[in-house]
Amino acid sequence: MQPSGHSDYGFLPRNPPPSMLERLEWPLDKLPKRRSQQIDLRSIRPVIHLAHRTTYPLILPDRVILDHEIVLVLRGEGQLVTESSEQSFAPGDLLVIPPHVPHRFAGRARQFEHIAVHFNLTSHGPTLTDLQTLEPYHVLLGGGSTLSLHDCISDVDPRRARLERLVRNWAEDTQLGTLKAEAALMDVVASLVRVPQREQASAATADDRIERALAEIERRLGEAPSVDELARAADLGVSRFTRLFRERVGEAPAAYVRHMRLSRARELLEDTETPVKTIAFACGFRDPAHFSHAFFATHGVWPTEQRMQAKRDRR
Image 1: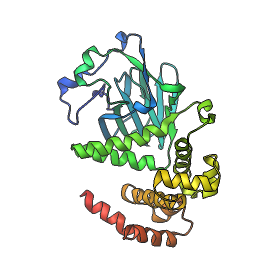
Image 2: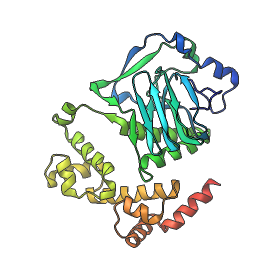
Image 3: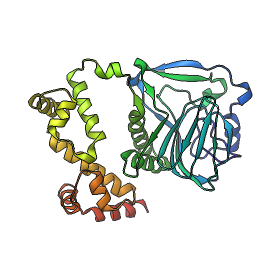
Image 4: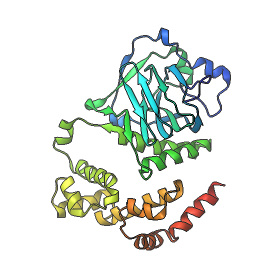
């Protein structure tokens, strides 16, 4: 997203020249019918074209973009209006705008702060040189799956920290920075994929069952799910689940849950200003002192020291 008078219609480099911006706009009155583009879930590998965090008055006229866009609202309220719906948004809302869908943003926010990421869903998507001949399309995910166009995330949701880190990594303008940014985006996109109920209920392989348990851990990390609960999520007995989990992941379920809780805590300490006590609770620790000692035992520094070190590294 860009303020009125600017454009982000497509796949921008980090500092696009004005001549390029003119080529990326698709006239609304000449938008032809969109064709369907089938994408298998296994082929999703997001490629970022633009990522930034910015603030400006919420005045955006009708527009069309040529790639997908994810918008995380940080400050300000308004409505995302498309040809078929009107979605209200507020801080914490995560919006997905598909390609070639006419839309506009409306609201009274004097200061609209957000993170925006433009991307292709796959590495085989169109490049900058394809824009002048690009045929409008809409994406159909394989197996009847869909990409959710709206979600709500809290300050301690790991997707917020990942998007904030994504913007910083993208701004580095290095191959490693781009790799890290696109890895973070892959996690965010995966969290927005919705599979049909019949697929969820179908018989699963051992790997599928362990994947269910891993998804349950991610979803309930703040509750620190027990091994019994994870085994039930995988539809396995505790003994078989523990054996398969160790074979698949490399460590026991309880150890993995603890590792993930402390890893998320480190992300939140480095990427947010959330109080340490709140982070402890969000990561499944009911006693902040216990959290601090567990964090020190794993990472070799106290939580406040980790946060200070991350701030020094960003300078």
